[in-house]
Every structure is written in C-alpha cells, then in structure tokens.
Amino acid sequence: MPEVLRAPLVVEFPFTRSLGPVQSAFLTGLREQTVLGVRTTDGHVLVPPVEYDPVTAEELRDLVAVAPTGTVTTWAWNPHPRPGQPLATPFAWVLVRLDGADTALLHALDAPGPDAVRTGMRVRVRWAATRTGAITDIACFDPYDGEPTQVTGHTGQFADPVTGIVTPARLDYTYTPGRAQSAYLDALAERRTVGERCPACRKVYVPPRGACPTCGVATTEQVEVGPRGTVTTFCIVNIKARNLDIEVPYVYAHIALDGAGLALHGRIAGIPYDQVRMGLRVEPVWTEGARHPDHYRPTGEPDADYDTYRELL
Image 1 (spheres, rainbow, N blue to C red):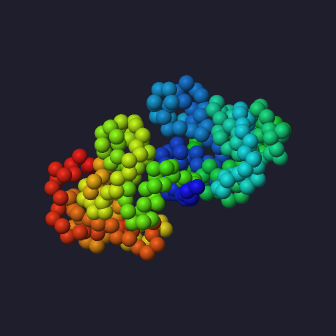
Image 2: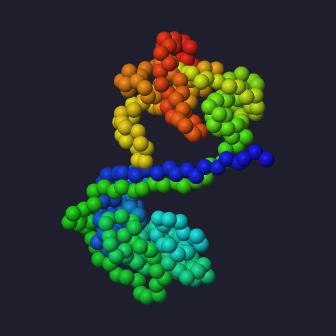
Image 3: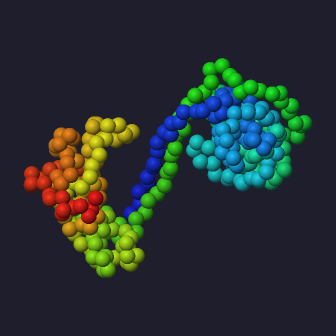
C-alpha cells in the first residue's frame, strides 16, 4: 500500500472593518450592557441591527433598546466545543428573540445537557466580566424563569463609541491529496515536476487534479515538465506575512514550466524585485530535505517571446 499523504493546514487572517453609526451603537451598547436594535420602515425591530432596510433598502437610523431577556426560537446542541467558541463545556447554539425584537440573535446557551433545552424556553443574557465592544460582551445566555425585563428608550449615543473591530478568522483542516496529487507530491520529493495530459485536448495540467477541468475527462498519462519555465504574470508583495520568514518586498509569480499547459505559482529570488518581468526565464532552487522548490531564480537565458506563453496568462 502506498503511503497516504496528510498535512494539517491552517488558514488564518484578521478581518478588520470600520463601523457605521448603527453597528457602532450596537457594539458600544453591548459594552455598556445595553442591547440595541433598529426599527425598519414597516415598524419591525431587527436585532442584531442592520444599516439598510432588507425590504426597501432605505438607510436605517432609528435605534431601539430591547430587553436582555428573550425566547429560544430554535437550537442545536454542541457536545464538543472548539477553541475560541463561547464556552469550553458542551452548550447549545440558540437563536433568541429578545423581548422587544422581531428577529433572533445567534449565541450560546449554558445548559447542563440537551434535555434542558427546548424551543420556547426563556433565557437571559449573561454579560462578560470584561467588555470591549464586541458580540463576545454577551458571554452567553442562561435559562431564566423570571418576569420580562423592562427597558427604557435609548438614543444610541454613548461616550467613547466603538468605531472599528478586528475579528480573527481561522480555519483548521487536514488535507489528503488524491491519486494524481499524491503522484505530483511524490515526484517533487525527488526534485521532479509531473503533470497529467488530457486525452482529449492534450493539455498538460500541473499540478494534476485527476481530471481535465475543460473537457471533464479523467487524466492518467503522466508527463514530466520543466524544470525551467517562464514568468507569465507576477506581483510584488510589500506586506510581511505572519510566520513567513521572507523579507519584503519580494515577488510571487505565475510560472509556466516548459511542457506544461497551465502556469503554477512560486516565489522569484536571485534578482532585484523591480527587475522581475513577464517572459523572464527561471529555474527551481531546492533546499536540503525540502519536498518542493524554495524559489525560482533567473536562468540567464533570453526572455521568452510573448507568443510562447500568452495562452498561459
């Protein structure tokens, strides 16, 4: 049996956005233990609030305070919380229609088990001990059997309003390549680049996917390409990536390896970044023990004629 290749991968980035008056008031309100919704042109109160009416597309500014108590409209039990979720112990994801609102808010309900959760149950906000102006200022919801909380009107005006947020986005997954890509990766470990030829259009796809994306037929004929190639397009990277030990600026390019019908991407080094150009002839540079080229460098050949790679842009 051939070795089954697996690789843990993480896609992570901080999502930064500025806030308009409605979202600013909503998040600042959470910091101040106040839940605000917005009234639409037909009188409905939306929580969380939106900046434009979902029916008429008119701008909305009429902020309304709603109660921290409400009713569960639907739910799902989460037996295995993941890192970064609201609670570290099993909990229920719930949609809660707060008293005074016409829509439901998604959050966590702290309950001892799924038998303790039901549609229609009453709940109340548990505020976080430290609040910064984010949805996490609501730590979770707790079951509640008291009277509805009375709230008074609110203008949505606060001192020191929240004007922007940074939300970390992260996806953890394990990648397992199929037959075609496993052969491609195994070849790279031997410092070779292998694609597969489509039996219909005769294009050689690198990396191979096991099927031609144009013709929709299976590919099995392996073709070794490169190692040299031509820069078709490129970009200059000026922002240093987290956990990537490469000094900026550097160049990332699409490279059409000789014999390939599709360009792959790679870093260009061994030349000043402002001298990289379309048509530049390059070759791979390997480091000891690596399963893929570290970067590509100029070969010293004359630049390729545009007509030789224009179909690969």
